[in-house]
Amino acid sequence: MESNMLEMVVPALSIFALRVVDVSLYTMRLMMVIRGRKMLAWLFALFQSMVFVTALRAIISDLGNWTKIVGYAAGFATGLVVGMAVEGRLGIGNTHLSIISPRRGQELAKELRGSGFGVTELPGKGKDGVVDVLLCDVRRRHVPAVHQIVQRVDPEAFITSGILRMVLGGYWRK
Image (cartoon, rainbow, N blue to C red):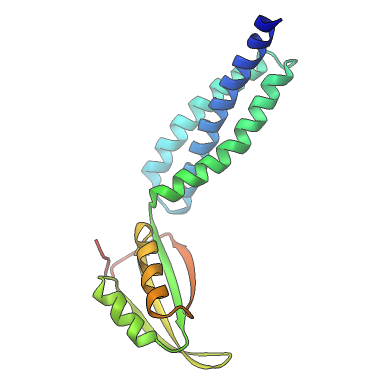
């Protein structure tokens, strides 16, 4: 009985692991495509497709085995979360930050520039009056540092961010 259970669980766990790797690579590939990183997208696609075919072959060889199907599905779901976490930790690419400061925009711009970040200041009008709009494009790995400066200088500031696909010129902190 124990041997029979092992024969069902080990293949299911193998398929689960393959799917985690497959979908994690898929997620990374997709993020590289969005960011315009062609070579990295190609590399992720190459390895992802090899792992996918291996997992698919293992499940198709025995479609009546429900443990393999569960392993396949659970690996898919887990791979999405793992891929997002890995991609977030790598911090590849650039981010556009829009910072709206109701009172301390000039001080905030000075602090950001003093920390090596390029900042463009624009006047704005908010619900309660005049605001400073700061535009700051940074490498993703520097976003936490910018957030820290903003929170320290102006905790009331409003920050939004977006992915930058293409960058030409400008000032970039190394």
